[in-house]
Length: 139
Image 1: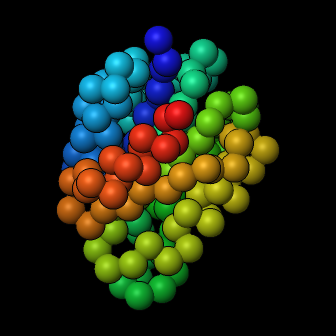
Image 2 (image 1 turned 135 degrees about the vertical axis):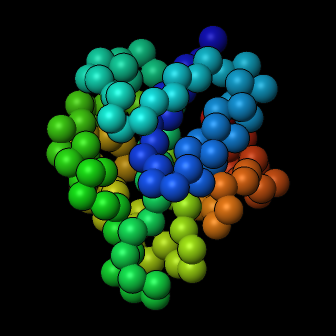
């Protein structure tokens, strides 16, 4: 059975809800899923994972300077080497994601494979397009 690890950082609960919808969808595809917050994450969790999904809410000004918050940046600086695992990133946002994914990727450079897919949601729900992206990602 394939295994996915979802690591998420949520401020208001919307990103957590999005992660839970992703988890439920992957479980429906018969993928074992371990989902943790960045606060509960411990090195070694990704060791036998086939898929790594990293999520964070979008911080920053309404129309520019979007970025992960300080707590997510600290998590990324201590993250283990999971470069052998297929990686996806996701975020929730109010208006724009801006440079969110570029910044997340940069903070994890050398620690993960370059992300092969990205998901974003304004309201924390998984769209049909998101499901299609997840299907392609998990092939």
